[in-house]
Image (cartoon, rainbow, N blue to C red; front, side, top):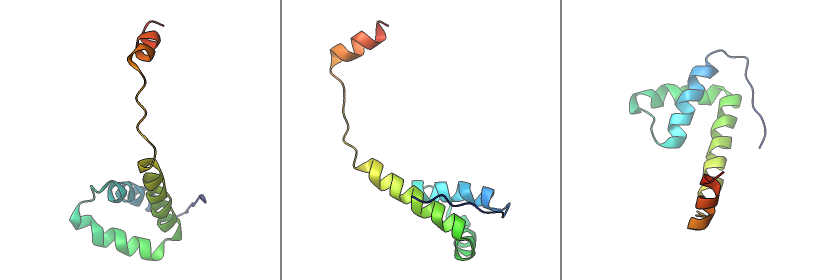
Length: 77
């Protein structure tokens, strides 16, 4: 993944909206404004792409639950 940066101070606010979009929690009213910003901001498009890739990769990580005795040993420390 490539790191994307921007000198646009508005990107900080849009970054929060991008996180919401990736999480499926973006308010529908904010979508047009975010889309307009993404159309003109390569850094934010990169952030959206990177976060989407992270989410897809994380979804493929198996759920490994330790055996009960492992938890017992850890909690005793």
